[in-house]
Length: 147
Image (cartoon, rainbow, N blue to C red; front, side, top):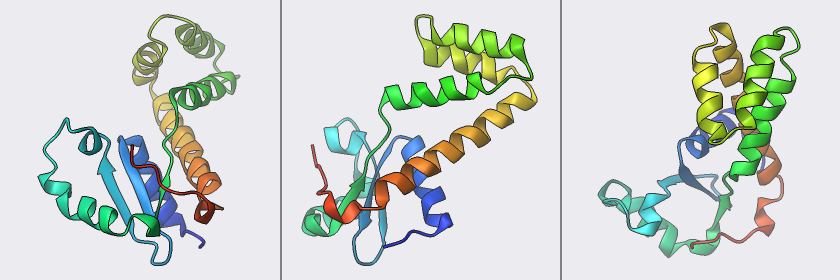
């Protein structure tokens, strides 16, 4: 199954917001469920129908994996390395990535970087969409993991 650009975008956004995403192998229906709904740390009332659908049709859905923290770190690093037009910001971001709490440090700097903040979000969104495309090309071969 080939996903539309809209589906890729939607899945990337859901993954970025901390959802687990499951795609029906025949219909392309997307179920997006917060991680906390699986580990019992939230009220699942709003996701009860999707959870039941997933449980009843478990083998028909394939999970699109979320990025690990090292993948997200690499995206931040790539962005900083590409900022050759602003060496000061580039050095600040790379320095933040080498410090304790690199995600927080990167966010604090990028949030106060004017137009570069928007550039960051566009870069990150593109990388997330690339991630989704890479991980759905052969998704029929991957069984979902309900841990």
